[in-house]
Length: 441
Ligand code: ADP
Ligand code: ZN
Image 1 (tube, rainbow, N blue to C red):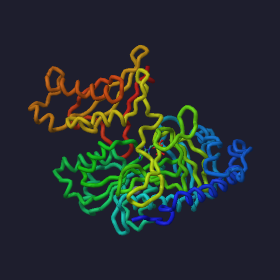
Image 2 (image 1 turned 90 degrees about the horizontal axis):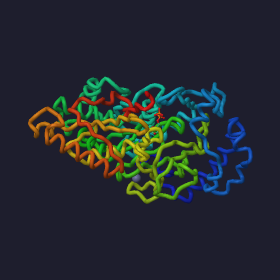
Image 3 (image 1 turned 120 degrees about the horizontal axis):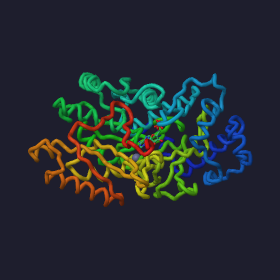
Image 4 (image 1 turned 90 degrees about the vertical axis):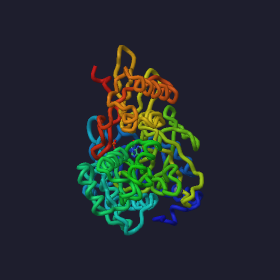
């Protein structure tokens, strides 16, 4: 089902005209109402923008700009016109605060209704929403989207895994929304209870808020008996609902481009990159009232494609996020994203998606170690619970995993094998994959 059929299937030429009109209006409002843009866009007249490509001449907005204006200094409306505030967790320091007018909340609902529909939702289906409710945008963002589409939304929020399983078994929802790491936790909990995937009522999952891989998707789809789609968003731009994969192809997320103008730029020079090339995602909000952003630098690495899609939507697709700039490790000069580690590990059927990366410094060198759980099957076939490195089959698996990592990443990472059930699991929210001990020294 296509929620906003007309715009989601608009010929790209018409879409670009719509975007240009909206961009001009955005520049006028931002200059007039937001002091930062009054300065930065002083030389830009809306009428000077003669095509969407002129966007490249506008300055970027960065997270530091929002931090400097903390909490409400970037608003384009009086604070009293906000009907809601959200904030991103931020791993360090102050929160990044975002605000919504009544119209923004309606937009937020609409783009999420579109995304849920892309991922397979229909009016009347039941949605088990296990994204966290609160300052985090995930819970309420999806919630309003589900209601807007006409679904029955169960606002479970994250955590209390046993209760989640009970609600899924008793209510029999068709769709679940949560982080991919939590979806895996739920799948494992069902397996531990002896519930087979085909006994679980869920058919679709809409997962996001953290990077994940296709190999992880295979595990989740098999474990829950679903087809899961990747949903993307960030608080600064609106929250979830910026883009989502359609269930027809599940190969890249359609960006709601009539509201969020996407670019991919070179991380070093800031120059726009052609389709298909990896770079930093940059978004311009075309219709938001409270917090309009011009060329917001997300730090997320992806690429864009306008290839036609089986679902009939003409909206651009963005590739899976390779990683966020914050999560990129530089190990002996090589850039490494956790998703690359995940993809390499999961090529080995003896390993599981329960892993983390420990980074430490020895002298002037960064040392990285990957801890990963082996599968139950591996232990069963070995006939021993022990993972001692003295055992041949254990050493063989460890060395094979290390070679696989070296081959696909280009630097050596030591692998430690762990017993099933011993690594941290997502308890409802985003899972921290990297433990960086370099700062401790
Ligand atoms: P934070 O995580 O910084 O507290 P947000 O909740 O706003 O704040 O998270 C937005 C970020 O989450 C994005 O910039 C991106 O790094 C990550 N993210 C969101 N959805 C996805 C996704 N589907 N795949 C990969 N990363 C994602
Ligand atoms: Zn599609």
